[in-house]
Length: 118
Image 1 (cartoon, helix red, strand yellow):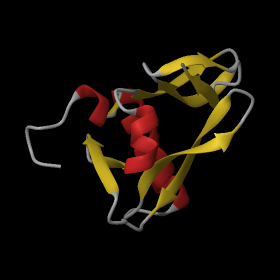
Image 2 (tube, one colour; image 1 turned 180 degrees about the vertical axis):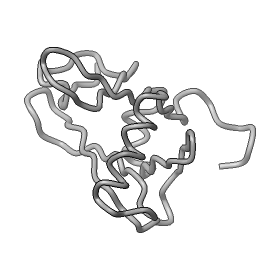
Image 3 (tube, one colour; image 1 turned 90 degrees about the horizontal axis):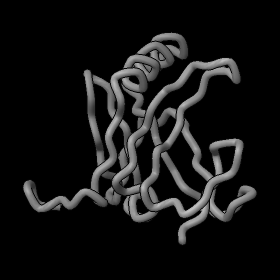
Image 4 (tube, one colour; image 1 turned 90 degrees about the vertical axis):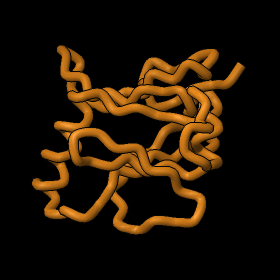
């Protein structure tokens, strides 16, 4: 993708809270060279589900989004379903988790890990 040609649906952002938590988890897991990988797969209670994992590999179809020294990696197929999203890390009475604020999701499950496109 040429610089300057990205549309909002070709971008994913990390909140400051998410970037901080990713850095903490990388230190805890002792994976300093890893990026957080976001994938979307079929399944879940709403049609698609988000997956997060640490990954040191980069593939030809990966796009990298950075904030505060940490990287989020997403393959182009997953980006089609999460483009325009913000990845946040939230701690509340229900617990702590990464949340995807996906403007493309027509509906989502109460678990926050599953969504449908409308």
